Length: 344
Image 1: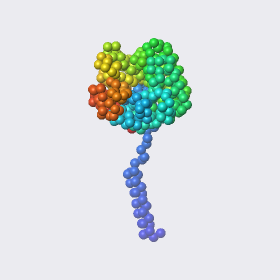
Image 2: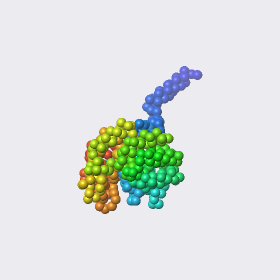
Image 3: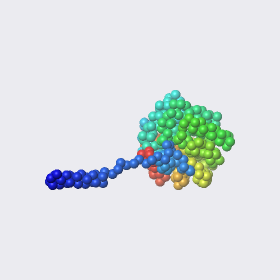
Image 4: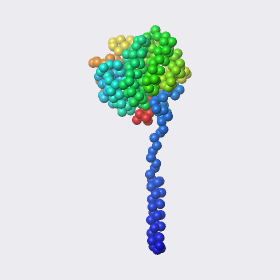
């Protein structure tokens, strides 16, 4: 080999080696997706975490969409403008709402970066109809929808099942059966259980949550209280604070699933006020989720619970209720909601 050829080969080899080093330095490795800790949202202690282990404090609204916007095409993008991370979706076992509709509304909510929490309303105040709600979730086509979206959803088994005559023993037995039926149907996501007495009876949560969590094969339950009692009926700051303090001490996974500015939504609103500002503030201070009732309801003119006049962000109703809850309060949805990275 001539010395000239040798030199050329040497310099070409050195050049290629230098390029390889430079390319290695300038082309970082492909970013690695974080490994999933779970396949669904999961309860850890009293907190909810997503499948990557990121804590989620639920902050969103109730949305009665089934009869006028069942796919959420109008409603979800408007709610999303608040920064909400969850929507509790009013649903029913009704021919107008198919399994396909349920799947599409869940997908649309997720596409808008919010956690869907579908709930059925067939057992409100009616303990003997809790099984009807469970029958609905366990139907083959409905269960398949829930399993298809399981990594991103919560399921509220039944809205406010039972009145104040439900005993602790009945509550335990009824929900133990309900949870086991839904787990057997393959529904593994967190299940949300409302207090009885139309959601108002915090004692059902405080007395029975630990028992039911222990009986759940997935240990993946959240309990929901609806403090609808006005101040004059015992809905005082003292009671609200005592309830929140108790669930914190007892390590109960807990949300305030409904509340509003007043118990009554008509001309009686001013005489049935609820401590809504205190609920927002004290729940936030204790990392407890809350969802006001309601984004919009139900006719023209709207009732006294609506946050908006017409489902649209910025068209606030029942001043100062709508605008404070959604935007302007230091404890508003916009100022306190954090979306987990898994939903962004």
